[in-house]
Length: 88
Ligand code: SF4
Image (cartoon, rainbow, N blue to C red; front, top):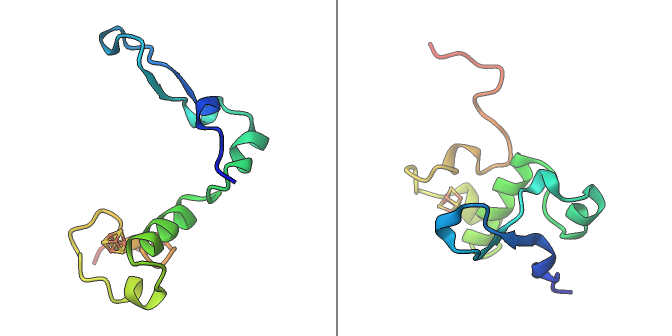
């Protein structure tokens, strides 16, 4: 079911935006409503989901991604390769 996106929009607090609707800050949304949107609940899962979307749902293509300049590339397998490691 498509969420009613208007529930998650608000008038921009920036005057220059002229009252246009913008996305609410996620932390201002009730947790149950936020969960109801079906988004991943961690940055790693969100990145993985984005990479799966980018690769047409094919996990092998995410594994083989050659776009090393993409900001998500190092995290595409759903984990943080920087965690617990120090540069040599
Ligand atoms: S890392 Fe690769 S698969 Fe993931 S979003 Fe970037 S280009 Fe797409």
